[in-house]
Image 1 (spheres, helix red, strand yellow):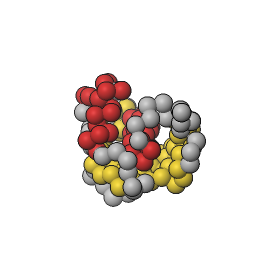
Image 2 (cartoon, rainbow, N blue to C red):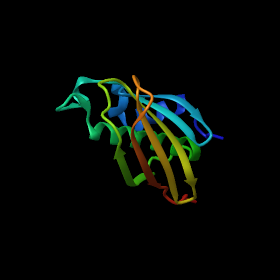
Image 3 (spheres, rainbow, N blue to C red):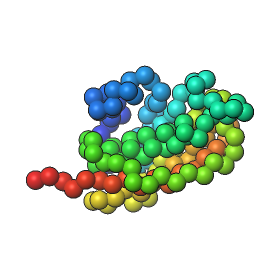
Length: 140
């Protein structure tokens, strides 16, 4: 059961990551060990060849994973990415990209998840990432 709602996550991001207030991402779905996050298309995400850049997809994978980790453990600002491995599967269209993240393991010190990314105009995945987060020890 998630410990944070979409509204609580958005408030957390606004407080701790004000650079995210430019509405690049939207949490669309939040369930037990699962989240869906949308990256809104911008021309600035394109690389030569008219495709969404790898850096944009990596950013989406990371924020999707951070979203589900925080949703499940609560507001822990110092949870950090320790590994992100991504495979680019096909050329994403210049459109929104949707990330579907699922936690594979949530321990007291590490969280591991996988992120499938899909163009809003296609059914086939454009990228797949595995992400590991380090969770700081509880104080007290």
